[in-house]
Image (tube, rainbow, N blue to C red):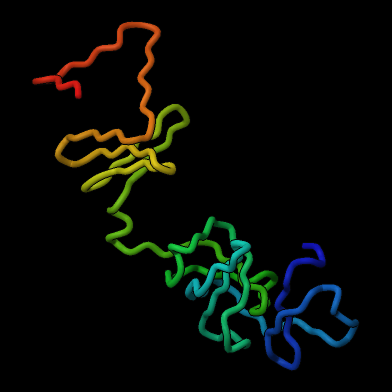
Length: 167
């Protein structure tokens, strides 16, 4: 980690935000040790995409930055997370995963085998990029929307249906 990144170190027993360049030998020591997994919460994602977490036993008394092994987004704010600590130091949390509840686990299922991706959902799947989207519904509808839609084929390009309407 370079000098531009914030670190959380214990000073007089409390975790504080410091830049590495601000450290002076002997003025900073590691916080209390905590081994194993701790359940905490993802409190904030800053504009740079860094995660702030809180957890039982947090000596800072306020959310602190955590390293993360998973992608976190603003949507994840408020979720329960699994935390470990770098070398057991409570001032250096490492977010190792998000806890899943039963509804989240059933909401979407993805299977990836290297040559195929299968997404299963109970109601609908929406792929969206800007103004373009593809929606698959439980009722069997496939909706393709976009400012410009192009269909190309090097072979036959067929349109089949019970009835076909153009315009």
